[in-house]
Image (cartoon, rainbow, N blue to C red; front, side):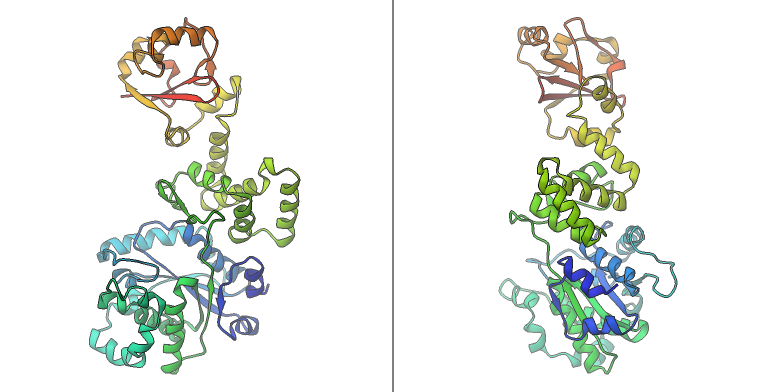
Length: 426
């Protein structure tokens, strides 16, 4: 497989240095991407770079994932409007370990000559003395060269510390070190990293290293102009304790048609022919959201698991199911997913002992919860047969008790098709 050709048709190339494609065609080539370890999980913005490494390995080349244990202590100014807090060594080491586990879900670290390798730049910087660095590395890159970089120019008015200003030189040395010790000839990354990457290729050239090349990916933007990978609740994380599989699945399933057609090329390994067939099928019946479902299922399985996908699909469909099927689907929801599904639904808390003693449905709808404004309104709604408890229609004789609790904690009240109210026990 031609690596550059593959990522080009997928829309994953922004800039490519002359000679890069020829280098990949000439021989098995080692290339690397850096990952920021300032958190203990990557988010879906990092998935673009992960998928680049996946394609690199599938094409027979050797991927290096560099986790910046040293640069994480400095802070990359690229795309940042302000300086960020620096982390201590213990926290960074913990984050590095977490990120490695996530990368192992995508890359093969034990497949022979092109096995993926994880490297930590702290390993070569921890013994590098400051005076040695500015003597042996700093003198090769001029201040004028560093000032010309967009990541620096954009911050000159608001101010930038020497710490952040030095970042491009530190990252440049990473490339030089990998070039010298791992025969790494290409650095890959997002388009906002272009300035830092070419500093590396320049440093390699001036220090007499091997040939070096660069290739960057475009920054992903949603069709409506909003930021990719963000929701009202913040980042969409790869760690299920930060973003549940249900919310993760929902992010992709709710993509617009235009975005889904873009994402399915970038975030799945489906071939050009498979994607064309899905697009044609989707165009015939867009209301079925075939592209979105295929995308969401593929990526949820790879980031989480088939089991997590099944639970997410069940949770997604629970609001649309009726009768016995709806009741059973609701009861199967794990408690963490249950809260995700009904996030934003009005709710109240009731003592568990009250539920165990039994609460009349009229009281449950009105005086205990204020879901409905009065006992009279509650009785009228019950006579209209518009009230459900846990998706099951009920009448005035219904007594809510502990048997109605979902996951031993929740009761879902409903009036009509879309008016929900959640009762949580304490």
